Length: 101
Image 1: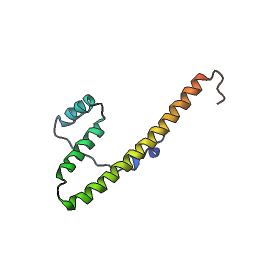
Image 2: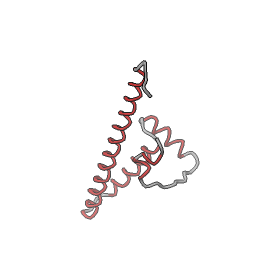
Image 3: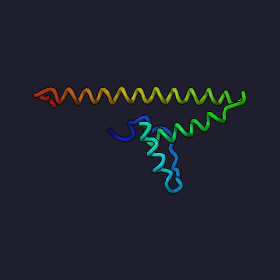
Image 4: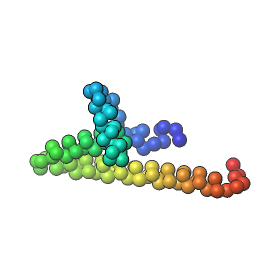
């Protein structure tokens, strides 16, 4: 599948420079938690943003962030559905002793 077809290819990207050893440390933590390095970084950034929410004016931003996260979850669910369909299609092709393609 070409890169442009993934929902994540439409999300904002930002290059980060890590201090020596930090990337490896985060990667090890992510692995222990069953997450990708990217998911671990996003979770930690989000947690730091959540801690800053405290005043009523921040609540509006928090609700916007929740909405953004819900949209991201929906996009990921769509991607999972597409991947599941593709895996099932490949499995069925392997089950068919006389493929038509």
